[in-house]
Image (cartoon, rainbow, N blue to C red; front, side, top):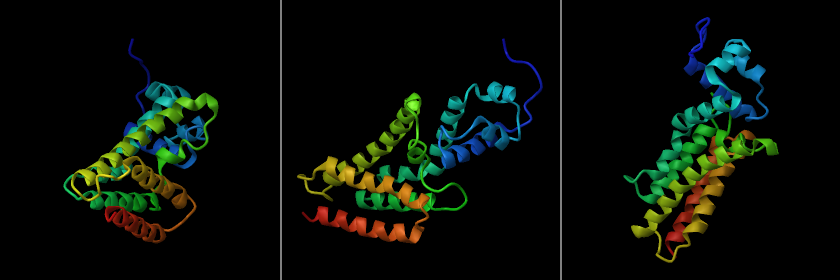
Length: 202
């Protein structure tokens, strides 16, 4: 039977956005139901569960919203209208810019929310790992295109180059959370792209 009772006194989209920011700042496990309910306008526990069923279900919605908004910068890695080098550079710079903006928590939700999880929350780690793996796949496709179109030699160790650039990408999150400014990370990206040039000249 459908639930009955008082109509919701909150905007669902705004509630998910508020939850996303809390999860981004504190991670899944450290974000309490009390914090979530307060951010949604001090809604009751009954209203919370009626709307979202569980904290985990809300987290999944928050992750989806992050991916479709702030996390959209990663789409640059799969932009086939650019050279592979230009796509890689744009993806790194846009990610660094997003992760260092002060209008939201610093860093990447997909990285930071998985840092501290108890063994009981392994499924949360797995959820976030799957999303990071998706971006890793885009980076791999970008490198494969570079080999296919002659930007990189056929002898390129694709797995190694993917590891190199993805490790750099994920490291941006901790640098941003530690307060390293965009300008410093942007300068590091310039140096990172010189590695691309060195690999392409082999």
